[in-house]
Image (tube, rainbow, N blue to C red; front, side):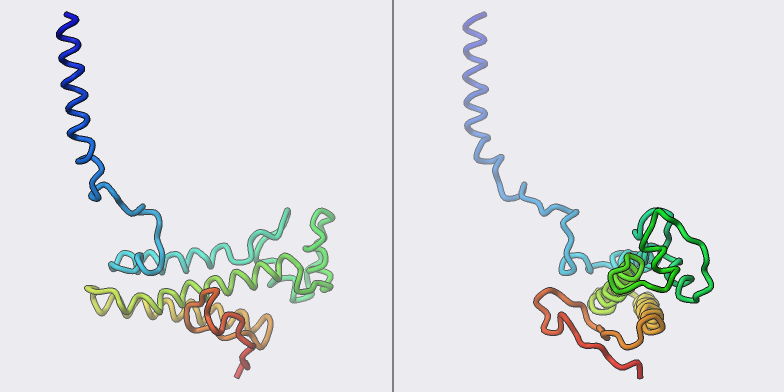
Length: 187
């Protein structure tokens, strides 16, 4: 019995030594499928649809995160001057309703950032989708048209709220020459 165990152990060790170099081949090196960048994401029509869906999703949460007893629509309501509700728990909301807010008020900051997130996502779609092949022209035209509309809608809202704002029509990175663009005229 001892002789059989020794023989099996030697065979197992020999097998491990022989299979070791084969098991470390390059074919096991995979890219993480969740590690997506604009360069490796926009490759098939489904990616274009998913990117457009993310622009729509950004619209839903635009302006959220202003604190307790607060919602994204309250910035638009407060600016009319007809809101009278006050909540002691949220000083930013009270300042907004009292029309004494500034650029640091959470509602203003969150709405600004939300609008420009929609614009940035739409710019990515408009920049990357035309290069996807094969993709039916009708689908490509539909996606690009919707992205242009969503970007225009975000710009329209931003111009109505703040007047002259930066006009960004291409995707930006931290190394972009126009990373901090000047305001463009409403004209």
